[in-house]
Image (cartoon, rainbow over all chains, first blue to last red; front, side, top):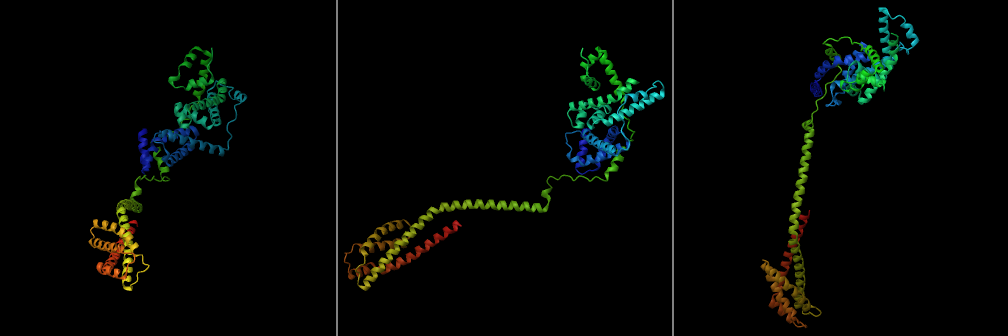
Length: 190
Length: 252
């Protein structure tokens, strides 16, 4: 796969523009999945995919032949996704979820036996998770998405973020800590 | 017993198989840490990745179609294309020609200077000989003119003919011997004739009378010798001019 990618890249740089179409077809699904998991919005993810491959094409001359194209395009996708998030935040009209309030949680989860309550709990957890994710720094968020949701190894996360493996591990750790602080009371109450 | 920290628990949760050793052993032994680890597992397990909406197999083609129009093809890098351009090829050829001409000039000059240097000692020697000989013939001519005038005027008082003749005689012997080695019979004969005249004048008495001078003139044919000397002087001057001209040409 990697060698095929490199052959296609050489062809693109030699003037065969259509070879880039093969690279897009090969990686667009995974880029979309990553973009969606970061943005958690289908339209944003679609936009991120297009922007990613546009930037990738324009920067292809700077691609290091020793690197992995998927890792390289992932980094571009993450940057595009972060840009989309920042854009969305600046345009947001709805306030991000508030800080966790144990009193409020107690009230919300008073009845925990019935099925609808379970559904309510799931929704609450999801809302808290999303709120907590919004509070993560870009590096923490991306590290967590790649490690927890994309199941990438620490080395892969580090390579994608362009940081040292230990820094990637620390970023994941801080993200989990923040999520735990937001979600743990729900679990205790449930 | 030292319990696992939160960081160690998280690290254990995400750790790759190869690094799940020490913490696993502790979790089997420590109930408190095992409960904390289970709680962490439940919490992180609830944080599920939002499932992306499915994309069909044509999704990549659609993405490509949406961006294709705004992409310009890369220009292939032509490593040697510069030399294919006619202008640059002409310039390169001109440079090569100029360099070749310059080098050829340098080589020719070096060889030519070497030849000139090799020729110079011979030419310099020839020039010195011609210059000295011309000077000698000039002095000899003047002496003969004085001698002829003295015979005509009949008055030679005050003319240091003998002393001049003695000086010229010494020089003349040297020149005659030198010229004898060359293949110039005319000059050799003239110098020989001149030597005899000079010898006669030099050995004549101090109070050289007009009769003595007339006798010498007649016996030694000094008029003829004077003509010979003048012809030789013209010839020597011409040779000297030629040598000087050739030297200038070589230098330039």
